[in-house]
Image 1 (spheres, rainbow, N blue to C red):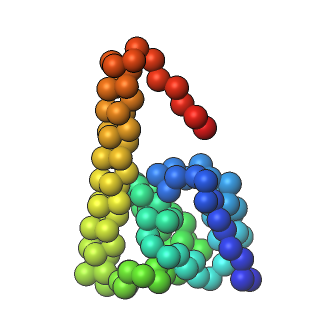
Image 2: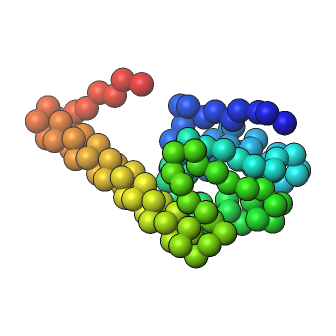
Length: 118
């Protein structure tokens, strides 16, 4: 099967994404042998979530490949490298959240209110 799962408007910081859920379901139904992503953080930015995802992959013998980051998850060094990348992805997500919260707090302090355009 040559299927693309795209959750472009959803953050990689959550597993609550429609296409991602569909991907996991297809893996559980043994429809997928390999998952190819551009970067690991496109799949998830949470170490805890990644651990859950890899458990599902392992249980259903699905492989995982990132085309821009070269690592081999069958070796201890590859797993270490992947975990370091995920720590940085999670850190980046948390720092971005802090910056946004700080910006809203500053706007509210100055103007007394904040308008969100979604």
